[in-house]
Image (cartoon, rainbow, N blue to C red):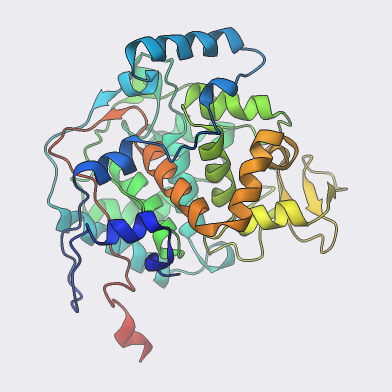
Length: 381
């Protein structure tokens, strides 16, 4: 999938990036001015979607209060409840080298699910970041900043089951780049996973700092996939993380276009799509077009497609089809891959940065894929 095929936004962005030409060596590619702000601090929002409408039935008064205060003071709670990223970061070329080493290792080690470590690296980055709560102003606010996923206590959160495979995969990278913080490594691994599986460009910034076990967030902040209510989904993605309906639909649907579930970790079983190592909008097409029924088995309650009985959908996934507001965006994303990937890229980048305030000197970075650098082509000839 070519980045030039993405939305007009990326076509515009391509004229802003400094690109290397005809060389295998990476050149510094950063975003500047209003484009950087658009990718890292602004949502891809549309007039027909307002966060104030995303009230959870159990916390509607709380959300209304937040909306009122936001209108008064002009900033969101997640924009204020942050930790300061370090100003002491490496040049862009350093991080492109780290990117390349992760990507090369993904190519060389195809023993993981369906032949790629890409999906689990994306999930690892998401779980490192998705523990953030904008309402927790203590050390335990969560997010990717503190790198606490390296501790056994956080790994044993039931929603993190199965992730040690990603940690073990990244160990050799950490040993080669000991100055790279755990949070920076884990989130960069997710960026590599998305881009090397034909996904959109993800802007990324370094500067996270490893903290101690006192910063481990409490359990049960990450989504419980067995829930069947759209209000529950909003309580996680909107109330805790601050995303709009459109953004949370993109994060869930594109994230579930890749990888699979395992009975030995999550208790669920199977892939969501027929191409679990390629980032696409296929999840939305299958969710809407196929008939689904509860799977008859001894495991957790999950859906299976009626036609082939080889695909699965989680109870939370089905809310993207049954809830009218969610379904509106599922239908849009099923028809418009460009918009789907643009919304996802922006939301995923900001998910990785939830709870972090970056200095103005640290510009967002966009990395070249191995194919764009022509790395490995000589091995294929």
